[in-house]
Image (cartoon, rainbow, N blue to C red; front, side):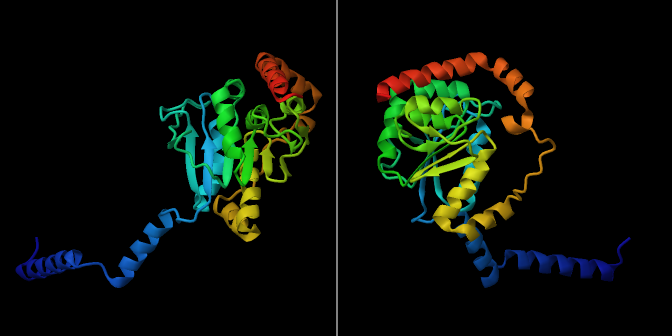
Length: 272
């Protein structure tokens, strides 16, 4: 039971706390709040990034690079024909923040993720190809990860360039005029292409170093604690071995055959 004196003390303390809560924030607190808000804002001179999204894409192809670009406070926009949500391989949907028409004409980065079935659709879609060709004509960087490289190539954007893509379909790049280089990240002039899925983080860090300097890229790598230690040495055909690669190719034969047909058609359009 609280004594009368303790009760008076308790009420006095409660009143003091209530009055202090009602006081305006100190200059220090206001400065802190302002700093946090400013850190969340995109600077007006931030690089403009258009990241293509499309139905049946691979979500991680997008999320890895997008995370790096967001930490750098780039002006990142997701772009598609309309703003209806598009499906991804993991069941999550993404909605465009800009349509093709709304996307700026002058971009710092044009980026295409992968996802084999959606990739094939994009390779065969004249509207997608026309959009990419138009923005790429003025973009400072034209980039892709995974099978997104096939989409760039189908739009005629990798002709006479070194490039790479997911290992299972990277051999299709020469059908569309590109030179396939078997590396995780390939840069040729203002084209930068990455290998399959997880190469997206490597790609984004490499591009960050080009645009913001190595120290800025190192800082982002530390923030996201990117220090991969895979449990198996099985992430490339060379590591996996011939038997595992053959089994994998067998399981995806129909998809890869469709990609080959799309690449052959694209090559004919380009004049290869």
